[in-house]
Amino acid sequence: MVVAQGSVDASGNFQVTLQNGQLTGAPVTVTLTDAAGNTSGASLIDTLDRTAPDALTQVALNATGTALSGLGEPGATVTLRDAAGNVLGTATVGSDARFTLTLTAAQANGQALTASQTDAAGNTSAPVDLTAPDITAPAALTNLTLNSDGLLFSGYGEPGATVTVRSADGLTVLGTGTVQNDGSFSLTLNAAQLNGQVLRASQADAAGNLSPSINLTAPDFTPPAVPSATLAPNGLTVTGQAEPGSTVQVRSASGAVLGSAVAASDGSYQVALGSAQLNGGAPERHRHRCGRQHLAFAGPGRSRHHPACTRHPTGAQCRRADPHRPGRTRCDDQRKHCRRHTAGQRRGR
Image 1: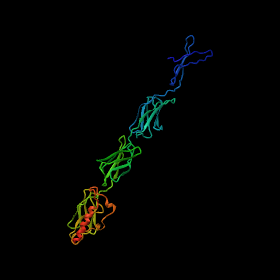
Image 2: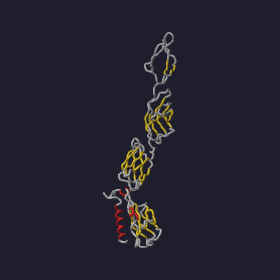
Image 3: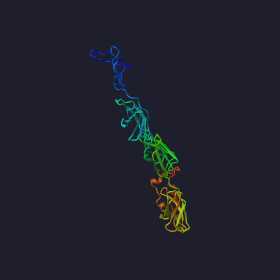
Image 4: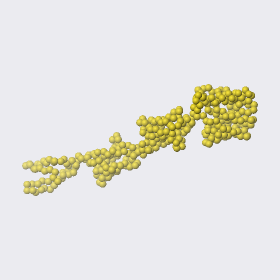
């Protein structure tokens, strides 16, 4: 196809103006035809290449974020950049128009990326945007705290992640919340945790990747129930049931510790006494000093009065309100206990 033509002047020079610019780098042919219609051989002239290649197609990042592949202009150089414009890797498009770009650092955390190709003349295509797969689990939560009422759970995590608090066995969800843009979170549990419970907390990002779990032990503000107790016939062993993990102490009427043991996971315990208690004594269950408890022995000719009653606690710790009985304090039961034992002394017991 003839794109332009002109005449040679008397000096043998010519200048031809093209109607359409030839800027693709493709060569054009020039021929000369004399007045008799004879045409010379063709001369090839390379044109300027100022045309950017088309954008890359079928661009994809593999599941591990380590390789980019797609189709481009043969011979062009493919460049992958991060959101800040930093070059992450380059590759050359093969003669079959395919390319594979291997990354030295995996892009596997949902990063925003752009890919483009540049031809031999330096013309660069429009960029193709893509998002790296997110297969990276967030780090474990940090700075976990539970407030004094056992309801408000807070800490720090990955912005946008969902925090879940579960029971120690992981089966019961106690509360959920979202990490704010500054990395902090605060959520309200559906039940107060005030008895030394072990809580498990983790966070999941938007892609569903789950962080390692972190354990937090709730404060223990709940006094254990009074244990049951049975003295063996030989007077050397006390057995019974108590709160699992609690320490049971057996004391004499004077307050001396006769033995102690830790209740097993099923609540059973067995305390070996230092000496046989065979003079008619029977174990008494005492709750003193605001919830701490022990057993004391008393028998014929021995006072059932316990030394704790002579120093009945009146401090602020013992004046805390009993949440189960409005208007009462946790020491009310002990005051009754002390009055009962003092009356027993007056009757010569």
